[in-house]
Structure formats: structure tokens, C-alpha cells
Image 1: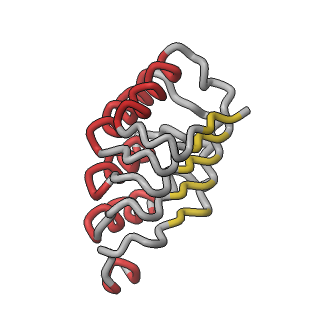
Image 2: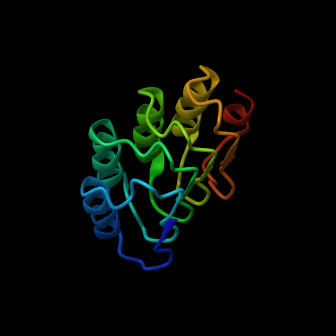
Length: 138
């Protein structure tokens, strides 16, 4: 099962809907969440990451989050949830075109290098124009 709501352009309202479905248990069996191109920002991403502490999604394998507006703060919220042992089944995270810079990229890589989630083997960061060469090699 999957939750696919790409290109709805609903912004943070889309993430609020994901939070409600998540909180009510409708996403418990979900293996893919595709919320690409919805202009989702860091504030609603933080609410979802905090909700993961109350109700995890251990079966989630793919998080499609391409083309939103996470920025450094948004990806840091997701990375922090991963560092707390959430999203343990996550295998792919598609974060391209999210205005993620060196701080967000570096933070996520530091979390992943701890080995907290060995299942996560694909992290897409293409089209984040703010990434410099230094953070790519960190």
C-alpha cells in the first residue's frame, strides 16, 4: 500500500493531511509515501517528525519528497527522527529539488554514518543547487 499525492501543490496543508492520516493509523501499513512537488516546508515537516515519536511508521520503505521546500531545517527534522530510531524500514528517500544546503546535507550524512538505519541505501539529493563540493565529499 502507498499514499501518493504528488503534484497537488497543497503546501503545508498536504503535510497536515499526512499528519492526520498518520495519527489516526491510516498509514500504519504504508510502504511508500509520495508527496513530491507540494511546496512542503520545514515547519510542517517538523510536526510530522515529532509525530513519528508517538506513532512510528516501521513499514515505510520509500519517502518521495522531491520538489518541495524543505531546506536545511526540514531535512534536519527528518534526519533527527531517523537518529531517534524512527523510520527503521526506510530504504529510499528522495529529497531532490528541496533547497537543501550544506548544513542539512552534512547533518543527514552524519546521522546515516552512525549506522542507525542500515536499510537506507538510496538518498536522492539531485537538483539541490545550494550543495557545494565540500559537503558532497564530507
